[in-house]
Length: 195
Image (cartoon, rainbow, N blue to C red; front, top):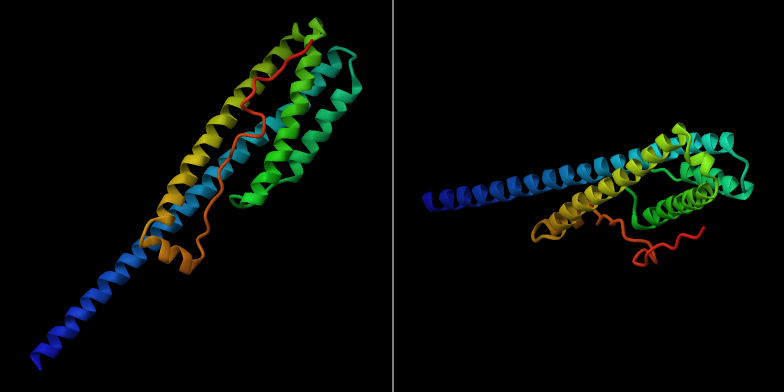
């Protein structure tokens, strides 16, 4: 009788320890998942900062000189597309691709705008334009930093999610792998600036 009671107690202790381990791993995954969402929110924050600066840049340039209207139109349209691609959570791989395409379009349009500005020295000499250019440069740096942080947090989450035995719980409770920001095609080549 004592042996049976001791055996049941040992089984209950083992089951309790496994349950506590499972709860701990589940809570860890929830925390890491929330960290990925928070990192994504910060990425969106710095992209929003850039999108908010674009109208000011366009207005400053437009007010300072007459230049190629199609370049200005491309910047305005690209900014509009960026505003249409938002998520209330860290994106899936397909959503991240869609988001990145919109951001790449804005980056390309801004690059064309800055090349056009090089042709108009009076624009560059205005204090407002210089200030906006500094703000855009700072924003681009912030975007790079936040994208890097997002990738670090996603890596931590993905590593924990794929580790054994946590992977069993992750699959059971539907914790999906998170995508990373990747360099766009052609990013390895230096950009060509033409005047």
